[in-house]
Length: 502
Image (cartoon, rainbow, N blue to C red; front, side, top):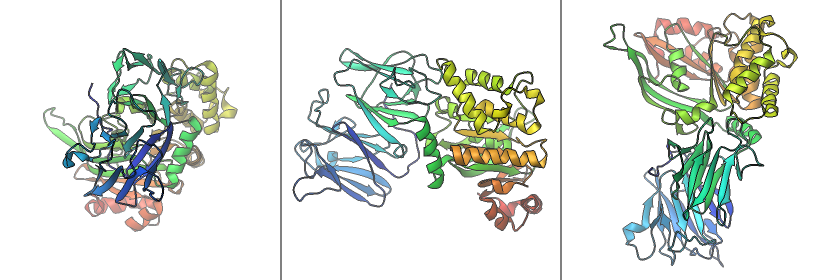
């Protein structure tokens, strides 16, 4: 298995620096040049190091023509870039490295198999630096367990979709091997699912859903996560404009009725969905709303030309790993009429969550979901006795109970009266704003559109769905020149080419 780079579009670059067992993050935004070295006397580099192994002017990070480069300063010990030595005896051209997402810079003595505890590891990232990072040393240890439960594991991700003991790293023949512990969500190394034990190499990228680790030979650098912190990360992302989905779909085609030709369903759909927001997907009949949603959530990739990124990672390439973060709720109720609300949610949790999750943890997920959906008072009620709006909320709970981060709903308001519809959308808005969920909803009726943070409007042009608008409801009214957004359907139908974007 070859070591690979993280798959993500370029964003603001950051350095994750591990020194003396402590991790810190340096963001490289706002400047095009940063010096790196040991702080001593009057010498104060932009990125100061404490290690005596580092030179005072050890190196420099430079931004040039859109890419970051590292220039070794020619000090005594030099720098390793992905295991390649850039020391003073190297030719000048070999002391320069173009940095890619996931690259490891290392300041140490020449024998990398015997790392000095005073050495420095630097991870260059463009996609994961928003998270806190931690480090677990493997020096002098025979194993490391990774999973949900702190009493079983050394590296802990206390998230519902992670198994109690999800994966293990063992010392074997002087190196370390990684094994998945028959987890539901799987363990991934360099983009490939781990099947059986694999021997780890420095810079190997290990992932469990959206939890990431980098093997540094002597330990694991990992994104420090917790259930509450994950929720707060989403809420904070909403405030600073964080993006959970970014799409550039050139086309989506299917076979035509003859079975030999191709029919294009959507074209040139470029949009983004912010974290912790409630988003409405609108458009007339045949405008491609369902097609767009199923392309955005990865449920229907066949015939799609383009890319969809989920928190900076290519969703299609990594769908089998990331799918546990996405919930898709169909228009039709998938619940069982004779069960109580609590029974339905418990069954859904047992089906979707790791098989080693105990009864108490399952019950907590059910209780949290009942509270989030305002169904606590109905927990013992048979679903057949619920109102239409309550049944819709149980339908959403089937995915929410597994703590999905992104929820995609297909016309959840269908058949509801105005009061039940407002109540449903108010609940969804609370899930987004108070609990950090990102929610994409196909709707037709826009009477409660101001409860939504953003709308995506599709238009049908020559029988192909096209993007007509993306933004807040107030801007949509101005864009289409209407007071009531229901009138936008008429405006678009009269001259759809005028409003198509891209």
